[in-house]
Image (cartoon, rainbow, N blue to C red):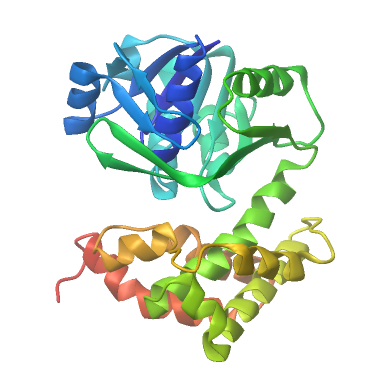
Length: 312
């Protein structure tokens, strides 16, 4: 298959490199020093599953130079999805799939608004990975998994073909979801509840889950997000709260969420797409979200400063 990866970060870089290693035709859409390093030295991935060097790597900062592909993978941050989807227009032909792999639950809608609903499919990637230097991606651990599915539900031939490509590349444990919206929300319950509290406390996961006060914040966040999902017609498992807490308790104590790391470093973050989305989607559904609203309000000044909208 022919792939275009927009956003060659920890997720896009890892999966793109695995696909290229397996013999698929992969072009990377990147900018700046990252693009220059990939063009000069190739894309390097360091991973417990085996290192990969894609060299030479096809890389460009101009999607119009590529032409239609079989699949566009969006590996950008959540707030960048709408712009990335619009930039993907030259890559999209009649049978192209556009796979979004962001945290949150709104990325597929951004794709559908930019490119139409037909090419858009949903995806949930679970992997700990990051860019350590231009041209270098580190898969830091944990067994990667990837779930993909049609936004309208069911299993299609095109999604099965895409799943087979990822599975053949041995990039991750791959599955096709009959209800990808449920899969997206299940991850959202976990990541939004943890990331908000982690960013607010600036403490690693082992601390926030062990102190009764901060653990109660996580539990309240989980409950709020579950209530919002059910009010919006998402068929979450009945025991989603318990299984989410089990997942949180199983993770390394030193773990931090990417939202937390970005805010601590003064970088733009996914605050408005995670905690802010809980508040926004809850208001649309008539569900009160006081804990999420407090966390979002408390972190908003830091987010606005990171985006150059405030100075203090």
